[in-house]
Image (tube, rainbow, N blue to C red; front, side, top):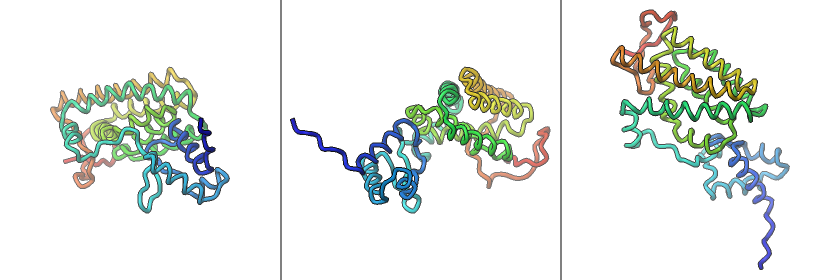
Length: 264
């Protein structure tokens, strides 16, 4: 039997980085550390790091974006927002509620796993994401709201779960935008959303997995049920992504906020 050749240093580095991708330490679409950072961290030359990254690119594990660096590829490629399928889903009235059903189960599981598995770096990222979301304008914080939930998903250290939810990023963000556009200017709904976010945050940080799962599921269910109530009562729901060019500064009635951007 032919003796297997030992791995070169670059191949060993590539294998090490590949394992970090597989175990979720490097999440999908996250930027890889620079060649200089990896070389210092791994104790090798930049030339060896460059060769290792080239090998990972050849395997389809990472993508190189001109002028931006290397990024972790997605196991399940995201659907292009302009694709016929995505447009059909976006135009379908059921899609929003179908997505909330999926989010309720997967984000509940992710929160429980994050409570059990989050390391110090994960907890720091969750804390930063929560603080940024709390400090932002509640009427334009959809991206930061989504980032908070994503930080928890990534802290689950279940790469299959992370990649599946990442592939739904466009639809996921649209569901958060729908929540922000329809609920955040209504004080009672926003207060409950804030309460759920704080419960999820404290449960994950204090490593209470059962509480984290329950809070995350209750949050998604509350948003879904609230949107259904509004749609049934008002016969209208904003489902599309928020566009600043469609906004004015006229405050809606009974919001309790001093300044609001309200769609025409």
